[in-house]
Image (cartoon, rainbow, N blue to C red; front, side, top):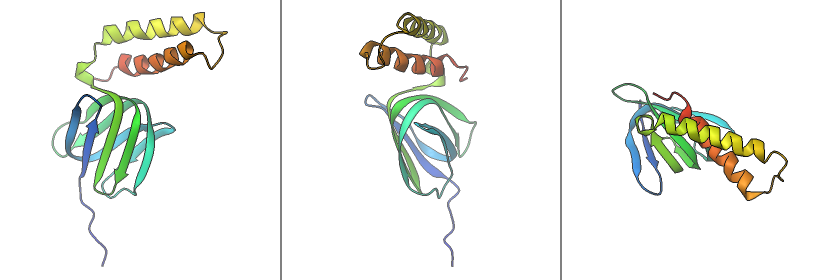
Length: 141
């Protein structure tokens, strides 16, 4: 006889500084390095690098929620999702004006250094900041 699959999965989102989420959810959309991963209860185990983007999830009760996630790792097991992010922010914590300014500055830096070698650490940092600013500047709310 087949095992019944639970209707929720435990989601935990942590950064080096804090725990942002620990709750039962019905589904989650996670920005992996190579594209989004949709996770439902009973998902096959996997381990992946995180990219930058909005992580959305639906709590067992209440409306869908959004976090901005930036790099790290995600572990998915049939009964839990662990997101270990380098940086994560709740949508309501993001200062959109500050994010838009950071996006413009990162774009400007990349335009000025257009001819720089791909290995230039300043260019790599600007590209990382640009990815973060793009997510943060998005209308996540």
